[in-house]
Image: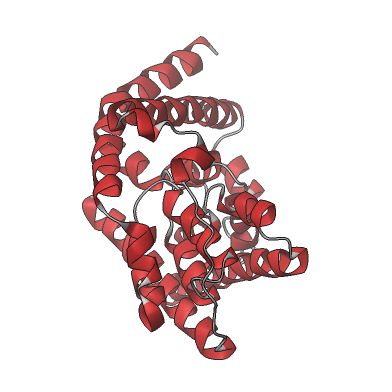
Length: 279
């Protein structure tokens, strides 16, 4: 147990400088990009713009998109494209673990393509016009990230929260791996079954950055397949789902969107695993 605790602490502490630099760069980009204006003016190309913006780590863009959808400024297709492409804490975590750039680009590219594709299909099916609303929204105020006090403090807060979650998740996983082995986690998440994406997509829906950290850690520990990894990351839009249920009074619509995101995550994961088996 002593070795498990020591290894967990050392591995987590090693991530701090990498995470801080990553979040600092992210904060600089997010404060320079006028994302709200870009999304509002995207028109029929909303899923493309949404998918690209969603690739930025953290759930800020998905939260912003949620409010824009609730006020009918953007389409459902654009909202879904942002939800699916949002990577939350996955990207900083992979970079911190020195994962190959080719794998990171592969994950981001798949999430981007999937988000854009599903977004266009949904808009094509619905073809509903959205009326603009004067409602305003402030990501920093909603998420209490203290961005208004400077990107340095915000970066430190994000780094601290992420390291804390990594520490907790890693500790639990290390205990399971130490006493049960990878086989236990693989069995728990149905690694050798096409039903694996059903479980990982469900985990991804947890409205917290811990879900993306858990899914990423499981994949790096070879406990889940690549398809299950994508399933969990596609459904992991951070706290955006919570904001949706809080801001949108149409509960039936909220549940439909939740089920849609879950279904798309599962479907994509199964397809990816099937392709992997055939290649």
